Image (cartoon, rainbow, N blue to C red; front, side, top):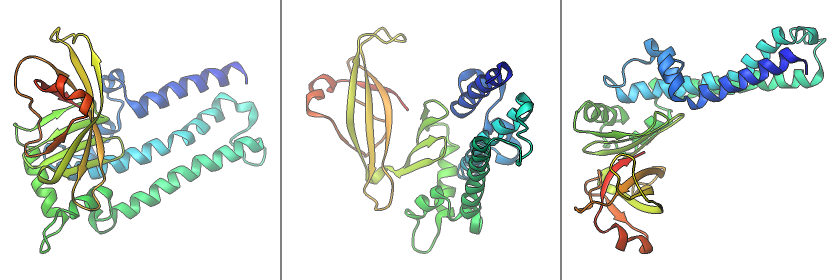
Length: 265
């Protein structure tokens, strides 16, 4: 490849990786799907469920357009290849263009399916429907989630792509393309992994990094993992999941008898 091609390819690769994984610098500059489409997405505080129905869909579509954006950019960066003319473009680039067009087409079709009947087919709506009473629907459960999320006593922590939110009733993990939801009263927590670190920069105390598997007793609710840190000052062990059954690995129990959960993500 010529120098303009190499320069554009490397620059676009860095942009694409940062746009998908959104480091702090991109958040500060507002180069995120949430910020660019904030007018359409609405407010997370006002309508948590509705916001994430739109956010996950918009994120999937925007990310699926990245290969097509690269092809369009290469039409200018490598104009001698005549990529803008399908008849004269190299076969490898025609195949890449086919892939670049197929991805957003599939994403658009999937999003259209999700949005049918006012988002009833979206994975988040389907999960909430599992907790709905026979005489109600998923929207009634969504209203309950929205109400609890607006309360100031909720527990929320983690990076934007892996946030954990715990309210009086719900345990939720917000990821890039999905929102995992489980009801506290039937959740089962299992510590699947623990890593010991000598000192915490915040407290100068030994800390332990835990991976906690969250499984619901309700059929159809997908299990998920959260990660958090444990410091070891004297005190009772406190989990932000009241009523949840917590299971510790046998080798870790003696060391974790007295601990306090400082953060989960």
